Image (tube, rainbow, N blue to C red; front, side, top):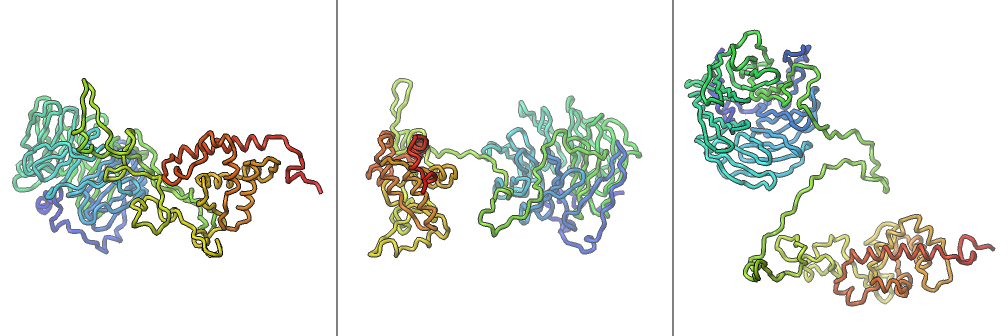
Length: 601
């Protein structure tokens, strides 16, 4: 039965979605609609497995089977998307992609999912975190995506198709197409196939870029699909009504075959190439028919999708051809299959499902934060800044080689990370947090980690409020003394219990024993109750060790004030030296009376 109303807003459904028939409302009566229970599935016959109501009264505008995981995605008219896991359609994620625009196309990737709206292309992780947001040109009206290797094609109601490199997210080229544009795109081994709202289908050869056009329907195009050498097209008559036949084209001969007459009003067309190249023909009222593209349609192959009076607005087939997804104008998504143990993909990756975590005691000071799940990080490349325009002017060529003087103070194998292109030095730390005006690089060091200058008064250290900077019982080490760069590693050794117990139980008669001085310093840290300590005796013993001077561990005043020393390499040498020195000193045989634990009364 032909419905005149459906023919009036078919173009708006596939293009602008601005028809008053599609204005979203939340009807309270629809909230009480009960979803039909799953029927018994007989193998080889499609029937409904499960259905979910995403948002009652808001049309589902796009459905997509994830090509990497066993997921079903849906997007609605208000820009909201949801994902469901497996044949049971368990809820996986739900998030808002766009505030106002409808979701028009969904495409899954290895690391995320692409969502296309009218003027935006956004990529999200499957959990709902934004990966990138690509904005179109002003006036763009996009409708479809086509993924080809690392390139992405986007088409809409404009006279061009945009090609984007997914590695750089840059536009590489534009293909000029016939107005009013492209709303559907498919790909075969030899052609790009573009569907135009005017009712034409264009084939563009992948090697020669030659085009071939078919005038399928005078009233417009509703859907098409391509498989092997066959192209099936459904559309409308000049009066805007569904034609009850499909145009079938042979891509080897580039000519039309015998039209396929069907018993439903075709609005969606998909190939289901399992054993044969059969077609699934869907009407907006929920009537579905399976038939061969070169044979006659059989009335026995018709089944009906219970839409509760709503119109079907989206249709998708899984890559395994075992599952069908229907979305309607009432906000419901239905999953159909011809087998109970349905698989969306032949090879799928297990989804990242976070199990229930134990309750964390937030009032516990030593509670680890590692049980808290975090988002999966994706490595991304940092692009090098452009070449300085002064460099090409100073190039000197000798034979086949060109030379240029390094204009910056950075080494030749380093690139500055700031946007201005000037080198950034991290060795320089301001003297006090009050020098923000004089020190332009103060913002590099976070406020809590900036160096604080202790100002002594007549009463010495008693007037300085150390508790203002350290409210814990863990003691710090004062950095105002020479060679205080090793304070960080002293703190590391202090919190290594075997090392701390070893040096605190060592005592010898050597004048400059680092193990003894480190044991005394650790004992001071145990008794300080949060007050800072000085490592003066330990550093004095370090300066008197000949091996420390030979390894360059003793810095001069000039090296400390200018910050020209590479602290990373220096602290590595210091760590290697101190561990070897502690091993040598604690292995020496001394008088038993020299050890604190063996003293007798």
